[in-house]
Length: 383
Image (cartoon, rainbow, N blue to C red):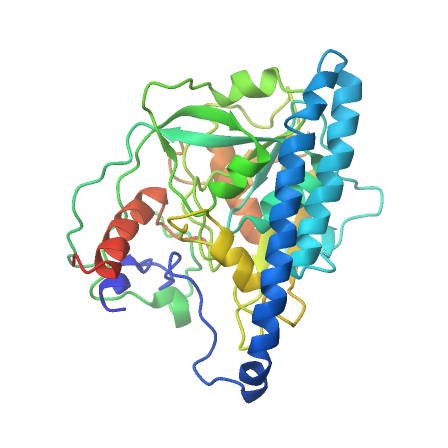
C-alpha cells in the first residue's frame, strides 16, 4: 500500500479512497460459517436482482402509461419505489435503519416538531459513500437523482512529491493526534476541475454510478442544477463530493451550487449525513469507494448479502430550523475568513461534518481520478 500512501490527506492523515478492510486476525467462527453465508448470499443476490428487474419493468415501464396524470403517476411510482427499495435493503442485511433528526450543536436531538418533509423542487444534500444511501433516499422520498458532469476527467500522470499543506485545513487544528499526521510521500490536492452541469438519471443508473467519477462533458445533454430543480416534481438529491469516499471522511465538495445567496429563500435545503461502522470479521464495509468493472455494484452486493450478522448504518438529518434555507441561518458562522466561490457547498460541508461527527479532507474527486489511475495500473500490473 506504499504507493497509495500518497493519497493521504495532509491535514488529517486519512486515506479516503481505499476500501476499508477488517482486522487481520480472522475469527474462527466467521471462517466456519462462511460456506453458509456464501450460499445464502447467492440466493439473496438473485432476489435483489429480481427486484431490480421488477423495478425496471413496473416503474420505468408500465408506470409510464400513467404519465398523462402526474399526481397519480407520482403516487404509484412512489409506492413501488419505496416497497422495492426497502425490500432490497432488507435482503442485503439492513433489517433496521436508525434515522435521527438532530441539531448541529453537539448532535443533539431536535424537537419533535422538527420534521423532514422535502417537497417538489427542494434540495437534499448528502455525503456519498455507498449505493445504500441511494436506495434509502429512494425508499423515503422517491427523489430525482442527478449526476455531475465535469469539464474533463482526464488528469495528468501522478507525480508524487513532498507534502504540500492545503491553504485551508478542514480537519481539527489541535496540533496533536491524527490531525497532525502528514505523510512524507503525500501529494498536494489536485486542482479543481469545473463541474459544468448535471444530468438527470434513474435510480438504477444512480446505483450503478456508485464508486465512479463524474460524467465527462462529451456533447450530451447537460443542464444546470437550477434548471433541473425549477422543473422538478419531486425533491432533488445532490452529492457535492461527486464521487464516493470510503466513509472515513468527507471529500472536498465541488462547486456544484454556484453563486446561490444564503440563506436560500426560493426553496428549502435539507442536509443529511450517512455513517457506516468499520468492517469486522463478520461484516464487511458498506462503503463502496471503487466501482467494479462489470455490473457495478454486483460484487459488493454479494459480499454484503453473504454476511450472516446484521449490517448497521447511521443516518442523521439536520433539523430544518438550522438548514441553509432557514431564516435563522447565520452565514458568518461558516464563512469566517477566506473566500468561497460556492458558499452553499461550504456551508453544507461544515454542517455535515458537525451532525455526522466526521472529519473533512482536502482531497476531492479529482484526486480520486488520479488514485484510480494508479490503483488500476497497479492492479493489472501496469505500475
